[in-house]
Image 1 (cartoon, one colour):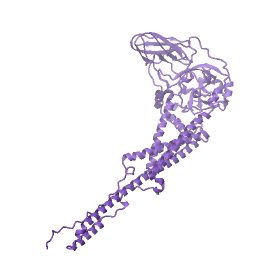
Image 2 (cartoon, one colour; image 1 turned 180 degrees about the vertical axis):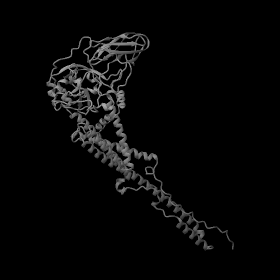
Image 3 (cartoon, helix red, strand yellow; image 1 turned 60 degrees about the horizontal axis):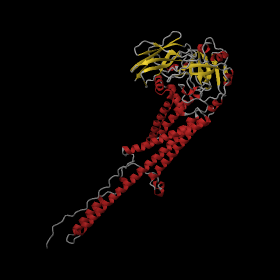
Image 4 (tube, helix red, strand yellow; image 1 turned 90 degrees about the vertical axis):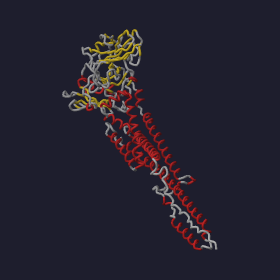
Length: 624
């Protein structure tokens, strides 16, 4: 009997265990790009929550407490604590727009902080809500500690904070549910892939068994069949069972994604839609409510209409402007500064709204009798017209933080006389409705030779709102920070060693007489002039003393006497000009002034702090 060569039994390859499913994009262990996706959306949620916070606070402020706006209160707080160098830099860079710059900076800070709170709430809840609550607490503290805070001023930040925290919680909860749904779907896909691989492996094993079964069952070698069957059984028993539990991800699917995925939508799609719908509704509501509240606040404020309707009595005396007081020279500052162009430097982030019918002026302190006057009481004392140049201590050499106006008002000395100041007093601490204070020497307010006034009108109309409506102080010869209190509400007779004003502890002198100075207006630094006869012109001021002469120096030549305008009075600046035969090239022009007491303007440069800048202005002029 012929024997064929013996063939070794070929067992089927054992099925490989299903590989663990890898986390998909969007899982907690996902790539950095996916993480930034969720963090960006969380930052958006924080920003929207902050917007809701501010909008709700503005709405409540409109209804019950106009002084309860968080952003304005925090802005005012920043103005109060900002160091001197920062204040000077802001004025130098932005001038009268420093308040807008501050609001813009605050808005940017709020945006960044809101985004961070959203990310914190997403990554480590409830840290984001806690951060938003702390922001609300800070705004609350800023509001209730402001001078003149009303009894319900605390309510806007409290309501705003609650609304913001609720919206932040809802938005981030929706966002986390969306993320969990994405992860759960990724787990399902990975599990399905693993089952398919296991099934394919099992099918391959069965096919192999079927291929070798006929030979193994040959009648010549029945023992082969038994061996093959045993090998097949061993292979099947060696293959591990395939289950969903083999995935390593820790994501947990939502409780019932199928229920939330009705109508054929995946659960992640439902959660994504829910997040964006809620975010859109919250953002739109914040925009409408916030902007609407600010607009409504402006619309319902009748101060502008009251000011326009206000009729002041004719003054008992008017300013006589002599011929030749104003020179007709292009580029030269006008003798009287239009109200719209008059400089504004103060600590009020928003212009206070003061109704003349409810305005009161209190005179107290070291007086024989406390006096309280209404607006009608003050006006009934009789108005006179005054021509006075005001100067800000922040005015640099050659700067434009000064202006001249015709003012209608009542002498401060007449009001103080009604109260009877003590002989021991040497200072009057004037106070604004926004809490600002100024320290003015009592002698400057009671001197019969000085026209310190309580002004109610400016250049022929009631004071503009931003310039102190309805009543402000105007004191010639003193920088504004120690005299020109706007929105005046109190005159406290006191002493310099007993009280200090707003700017004194911030590095400025308690007493600050205006320093003799001069300025070149034309030609401008950025303009090239033609060779030939050229007019150099500008203004000079020495309030309460007056200007005696102005001199101009071209390069290293001798000083030349400029021609002065006819002065209105000692409290008003004068204009000056010099005709010059300009030659081609670049020239340095210097100006200096001398007052009527013979004092020459200080040449040495000094900064604006602590009591005003000094120095001669030098300008480079280019001649074609």
